Length: 141
Image (cartoon, rainbow, N blue to C red; front, side, top):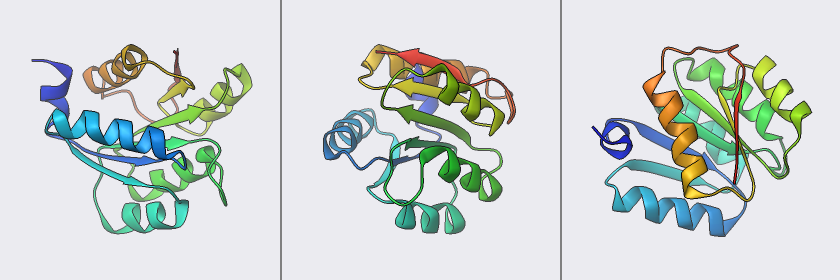
């Protein structure tokens, strides 16, 4: 079974202020027939995690109003079983360490490639028993 076949049974939430990332990933996941929801702000994203159900939550670190680590930590209170992935604007080992301590499961660094995204998602979906508190896996583009 391919990664995208596995992902079709999941609902994925993306929060990123960058329209290019939102649009690109929306197109990718829609072409792969995945359930994919995206927002450009943490207020709408928080409403979604409080009321909906998500299997995977991906959030950019540099969101206006609340950084991605804080958002993913809060989201984990409402969606404790969700795989949480941080997108960081630059490769910083300290951010990955803070993310891991916050229970975030993976970290992608901008600019990331499709291969890096698939590697991160594949490792986390295949090893979805990896719970909060596991070290964040880092992938660079």
